Length: 206
Image (cartoon, rainbow, N blue to C red; front, side, top):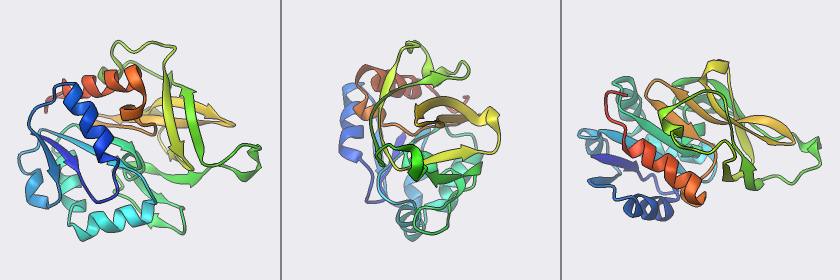
């Protein structure tokens, strides 16, 4: 079963439409911890504020089950805020704790870059290493971003993709069964569909 986490603020309609287009089967929206018991893959899409999103995950008692599923090796794909949740904390509107499964923090783009924040639009992806998530992806690939905050992993080995918006920033991570991207694959046309398709091919043995 492919579990798509619904905490009330995710961009679910676009994500579900993309998954249906790709022929994904056994997709289940997850609202309660018991819904995760039979998950073979997890997607956590997200938009909005970090603190409010984590608060909602706690209210739905999904934090511990999510961390447990990740620790058991279930393939996880975080999208946008679903990537940021993986980190230890964010300084968006105060300091808020995340899932803490990847060391590092989430911070706002500098105000002195001379660029509009939030960062909205298409940016080229720069991959740092091979990954099953990026199979058959063109080195010239672009993806669509909408965000004001970006992730800063402590371990450079966790970085899978970077992009540039005034400064270079981490646009995707991978550690074992954990995959996450700051951009929106469901809005990134052929690039995003390829990434989602690659994730759908993964199993618990990733």
